[in-house]
Each structure stands twice: as structure tokens, then as C-alpha cells.
Length: 315
Image (cartoon, helix red, strand yellow):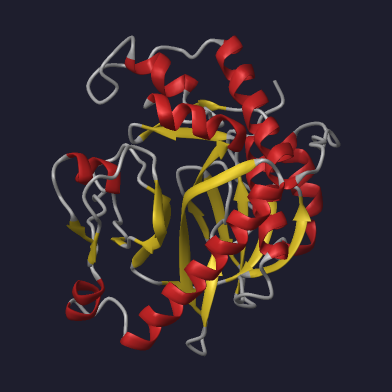
């Protein structure tokens, strides 16, 4: 399989290896961000999914270009389908999640909290009588702490953000306004494609001048919950989850066979990997409206990336 499991390029400076991305900091204040094909879950790398890195990079590119009039973003250039050159930022310690529906499965999701009887959360009070996956009266911002070094994200209210000194009042108002505007644009464009953007997360940082800038990725299959619009009403009425781009085949397969936090992870079957790759490619095409064309140039994905990044090699 043609996959990018590792993106170590010794000629590039100041490497930082994340779970799925490789980063290299350049002397000019920019950062090379390479999206690998690694699939992370349960705090480990499970496998690599062909073309996943290209799908995520190009989906984010589509949305960065679609929303450039709403707020500044970190993009400088795209020298390769898996690579973005971005402005190096100081990432703000608050993750901004915007939700348009009562949905989710994690402990910080509003559906989980609502099922547990909570009505006041994230500084917002939700009405009684809402049903699973119901559209909210209006989109809401549900920020969480941005955990580093394997910590857990915790829910935050606007008051807590200010009391803990995580953001200034001006910064908080700016990122909330940006996030709601981005989400509204995302929902409108998704509707044109027969999709519902149910919720998503955004990451912001500041440049050397203190300007707030959108970073990381935007409205990708990994950062957002997209539902198939024509499946929504029937699913909602029957109490089922609306149809979505279900990329969790691998996660479900693993949990059916072991405790992934305690046991060795079994080898992932090739058929499962190929199925997941196909879903990522389908998601790209549905979300962007463009046909997915994998870049097969070069002897390997890494070889192609090395060629396209040669300009940045340390002298």
C-alpha cells in the first residue's frame, strides 16, 4: 500500500512529531506541517490509512479558502498535497467547539451531559424536553481546556476562561465571534452539498503581533461531525443516529477484540484499512464537491514530499 506512516526528513530543522502530523519549524517564522496517514486512537497509533493525510490537508485547504473573508488563517502555501506551510503561532489554551445539535458521545459532549440531567453547561442553559440529535435553538460555543501531554480536556464556561486567565475578554469575544461565523458558513456550504454540519472544533493562535489566527484544520472529517441530510429526519424520529461518514470501523473492530488500553492491539486487516480509506475519500468528495485524485507521483509518498520540500532543506 502507498501510505505515509512516517515523515522524518533529516534535512529539515526543528522537528516535532505529533500523533498524526510531523512539524518542522523554519527560521523565517513559518512551520512545515506534514499530515501523515497515521490513525490514532486509544492513545496509540493503530495503523496507517492510505491517502488520509492528503484528504485532511486538501479538505482543510478547501475550507480555509472558503472562509478567508471571515477570519485570518495560518496558511502560507501548499508545496505538496500532504503539506501546508503555516505561520508559527502561539496556540491559545482553549479549544473552541461549536455545536448546532444535541449530539456527541464523549464525556464533554452536551448530549452526554444532557442525558445525565445537566441543563446548565458551558455557561449556557438548555431547555428541558430536547431529544437526542435534535437541532438546538441556535448554535452554541462549548469551549474546553486544551490538554497537553496526554491530559484530559475539561469543560469551560466563559467565566471560568476569564477567571483562570486562559484568555483575555477581548480574545474570548474574538474567538467566539470567529467560531460562530465559521460554523454558520460551514453549515450553509454543507447544506448545499446535502450534508449537515452538526458540530466541529476550531483551534486558534496568536502571531508575534498578538493577532488571533485560525490554525490547525477546519471542517475536516476528523474535526467535525457531518451527517447525511436526507437521512436526518427519519433517523431523528426513530431515535437513531443520522447517517454519517463512519470512519470508526477500526476503532470498533479493535474494541470488539481487546481492551485497547490494557491489551496488545491485534494487527488490523487490510480489508478494514482499505474500507476506511474509501470512506475518507468519499467524505472529501461530498464535503468539497471535488473528485478526489490521489497524487501518485514519486517512488513513495515520502519521496514525493522530500522532492517538493527540497527548497526548505537546511543548507
